[in-house]
Length: 616
Image (cartoon, rainbow, N blue to C red):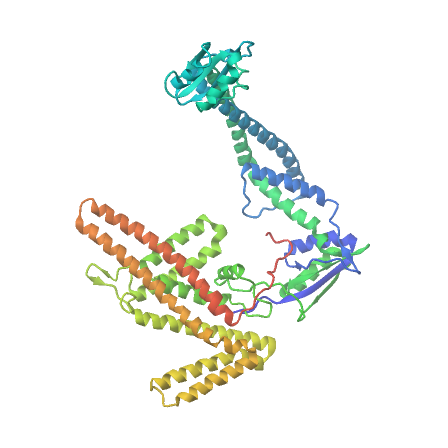
């Protein structure tokens, strides 16, 4: 079992500029070097991208635009096998870009026209109540007019009658609605003031005067025009679908090809460069060094300088985790948190062992385990990109099934009919024992963290510092145990002997970690007691399941329609309880690792190994 990250070698590759492109091509194929970007200094400038970089970038922008417009998403990696195929794809991209862009602009114009027509229809529709043709709303020398909404047409007419007897109102005569008012132009201002007092809401018909005929006739014409526009839009969308079905594979292949070519063309921006040479610095897994050197030498006729050496203490070494296939899904938690430093023990294997145990202990129901196992297997097929995450949850569901058998629980039932499920521990009735077990798990887990921390410190600073900084905590624990056992009369040692051991551990911690060590001594106990949440969350889940079962049972006994209600309570109640259980078990298991476990040994902060040429 590899508890540490993969061994890395520090490499320097240098040579004449005429071999740079060949060197870049081979490094990209190898997917083995993590390039360290060069910063400009007195010795060398930052390199310049290849001449073709600009054209390639432009083509990549185009193809990404096409894929975005068509809703094509990249999934698996695609390969372009020949230069001829690449050229063919280049012509296709150019052709499709102009066609798709034209169709998109056409679609936007159609949408804009339909929106304009709909707005006109909404403005014309109220005027239909007036029964007037739009020609009537022309410019007159002696007549003024208003069109709008009123809450009381009768009151409005009375107000106008007080101003002048020369007027006509069309539309709503008594109640509320749209009206058109024609009045002699001399009374326009007084009429406008009276309309404001009546809270008249005027309609702006300036842009509606372009039309001829009644509002209903105009609306019918606009709706017919919208029908034609929608048919045209449908043809545009149909063409989009045809292009997507016919060319999506080619577009994705071309996009992958261009992304690789752009990465290679812009790679010199990460190099050091002089007038005639280039220098690449980076990291390669030690097992790949010989292969990389041989391949580059063969492709450049031994004209490239290649040097590999061991990391120095000051080096910021990128980390590539090195775990077996079964353990590797749990690297998800390291990606979520931070990478271990190069010289640290990789905690992934410990998470692989303990995370499912803590998760299963909390959820701990055989029925819930079966349900979540089926759910996560199905989701893994639906979302293969999240395969590692669902693999973690599948293992955790298996652990839930195991603990469900130990606790004798099936959807909260400990007894089905007259058959009592066999169990070793009842979470419903043996809560005190469950608490002791939870704290004992915490004791073991925290101490494993201290031992891992001892191994880390031993490698970095030697045995003395490792003992003082980490094993002193075990001395402290031994002292506490002696104090409690002597107080309970279980051992014959004096109480003060245990106190002396505790004081000795405090002195050792002060030497090893300074004042922080003794100050954090109470924190170690709280860390272990924090695992009591394993019991609390588990019991809360069981009790909620029991309440759901009891409520549904009462519905079943009532008979009739209440049986259906009982079934709904069972289904939805347990679905909610499973959801809460999954969330609580996942988050609290994670918290116990990050806060209680990792703080005993883990520093982290390393960069993740990101090889040149690997798809991000």
